[in-house]
Image (cartoon, rainbow, N blue to C red; front, side):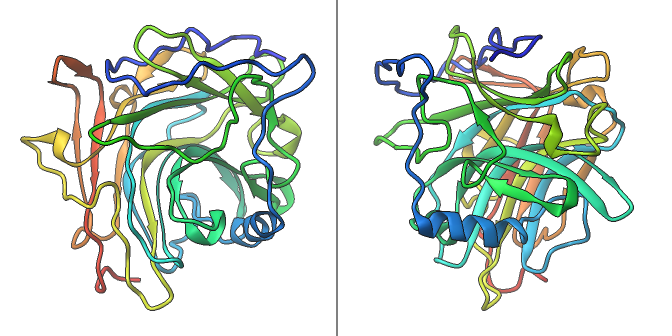
Length: 313
């Protein structure tokens, strides 16, 4: 239950550690999972059909700030997320993601992972880690609300709420990558500076029909979904990016891609395009590197903004 090309050597390049409790693994043959409520399973099935992904036409009320590259095939993408807590309405959503995908003749295969605040999905206003997939025949799912994602990690529940402590900066480092031998798409997490990554689980190749030989597109950024009244929530930490102080707004950093030969590159090594559909409400700046509090950050995005009632459709 390991990828043929392990990414467990993946290490966060950020010196701010997420506070970790001592983890005791489950017995052999078992894994730790959060119990899915009937409400969550129902919500996940309904919302999966509406989940926005950048391979399709704009979704009403959805706004995005990020970068993407169509110059595939790609075998993976990874990034470090600064995780934040956002106060939003019950019918809004705000999240940060990395993603891979391919499209053909109005059909889409897509995988994304990151953090999300979505009361309609999770039933509360907390920040959750999440994974989402859409595959052949239009089927798709969040987390482990239905069959699809196969968890292998015995130490941590994979998709869970994230706790915050006063003054703490929480980071999440995810990698989505295709196994060389099996073609499955793995999710790996780096835990902190100098700590090896954990292979969390995989989306089987059988879920997809357009991802056999990599993905045509990879990307990263922030996304929001407006309420039915048209009010758009905060994206990131609610602050517009400041090119002189990137630490003051939401960060996605150390963004790297795996090319068709499984060679790893910073995302600015490949041709990229900016995706920003509502500059009145949200912003985006891009940088190659910066140093803050003795931490070195690679290719990064500053993204986000306050939202509002006139962000467009």
